[in-house]
Amino acid sequence: MAAFVLTTFTLLCIPTLPLLGSPLLWGLLPFLLLALWGIYFALNRNYLARQIVETLTLDDDAAHLTRKDPSGAVQEWTCKRYWTTITKYEKDGPVPHYVTLKGMGREVEIGAFLSEEERVSLYDELQRAWTT
Image 1: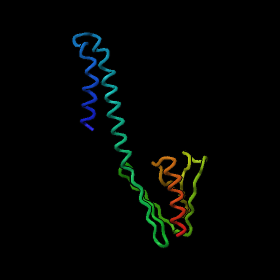
Image 2: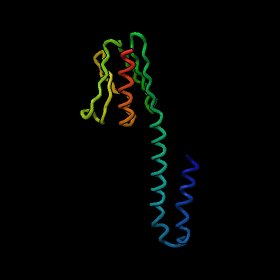
Image 3: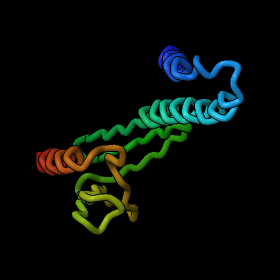
Image 4: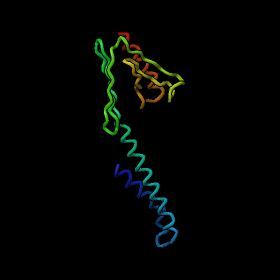
């Protein structure tokens, strides 16, 4: 990531070389640095978002969902497979094809970081896994 940011900085500085010694350079410099900071911030945020891990373990009689957030916080949910319902909210959820598992008085989201097509595929795979 550092090499990319350094390369971006170098490429942003090339068009400003004719402005060296000019007061116009000082007017452009804050915007160049702001653009560089924006790229760094976006790359860093993307790196943190990739660290979300969800693990669904299915035993003969139980389902166990573990989610690890980028902050390191771990959330767990366990339920008997017989009492678990899988729900896909086509348009009623916060995102299209919102997939949840419900049981033991709780409804938990699964696959929050997936795209729409991946959530549809996840729902189909969960339905198949629960029937076997």
